[in-house]
Amino acid sequence: MSSVAGPRSLRQLLEAVSTIGSDLDLGAMLQRIIQSAVDLVDARYGALGVLDPSGSRLSQFITVGLDDDQRTAIGRLPEGHGILGLLIVDAKPIRLPDLREHPMSAGFPPKHPPMQSFLGVPIRVRDDVFGNLYLTDKQSAEVFTDVDEELVVGLASAAGVAIEHARLVARVQELVLVEDRERIARDLHDTVIQRLFATGMSLQSTVGMVGAENSTVVGRIEQAVNDLDLTIKEIRTAIFGLERAGSGRAGLRGRVLELIRESSRALGFEPRVLLDGPLDSGVDDQLVEDVLATLREALSNVARHARARHVDVGVVVGNGVRLTVADDGIGFDPPSITSGHGLGNMAARAVRSGGTLDIQPVEPTGSSLVWRVPAR
Image 1: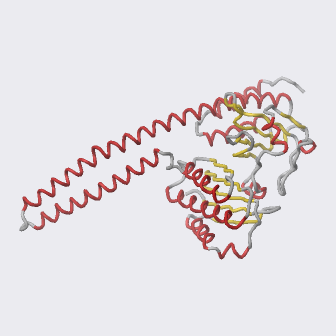
Image 2: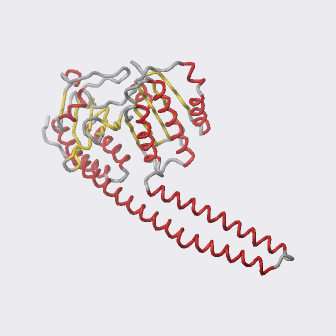
Image 3: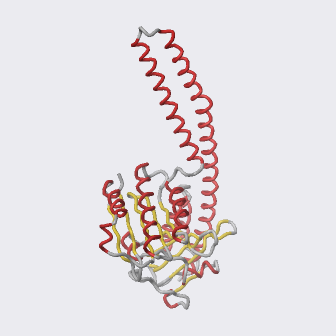
């Protein structure tokens, strides 16, 4: 077996590098990175684990090769124990013929598909480890080769550059948007509202000039003044919305993260979260409110009843919206699923948009809530 990458493999690597940088949305980029890695070395399964700010555990886990039902059946997302933790402790590539035989193997949870050959490679952004690529079950051979490892290391290096670029572009765009919002809000307040107010005052003074006997004209002028007052109120509401958007609270992504942080006080810990897809552009306003209300109710239920130590939250926007909340608590009483007022509200919000709510027990303990709404 050749220990040097051939022309075909190098061409695939170049194509993969071009693909991952084709769109600077970070969520979409991470999905393309792991998909490219899977295709590059012919792996059956792949995952990209993003480290949390402490660098000691996984905060996001993006998978390839598993469908929605398999992800739900597996339950809680991995935190980085066992083999996955090797790359967190020592950020160097690792290749195993059978991950189950490694002394650090922690085994698989129930309903997890069996996996054997393994290749893990860290992704660095400058000098910091951003996350890790995990690839399992090479389909065209029994094990991953040293050439596979070199190819994925090259892909990971390019991915680190692309991720850094996406972050920088996002920061610049955010600054530009904030400046634009501030300028628009300032112009609306200092120019448009003042002109409308002055026009209203002028119309009011005109009423005295028209005379009470001309009641039709007076009525029209007064109606115009009332319309101007309403317009001023609406513009002030728009200014408030621009200011909120400038603070980063407008998008679904930011509002989900804010809600997660708020829930940590009641839970006693911060849930782990997976956000994937165009959350800030692919969800309309009403659906945003439904997702947030459902997530808030689900986390409240966990905090009040589950006695959980871990909660995983996922919001995936693709062919519709899929919200999952999984915990490792004491489970639930089946009759309570239909009798709870909060659960009824969550189900009603899903049904209103043609979706579903499903709550199932998770082995060995806990429960999983899946709230789905199809694309509109």
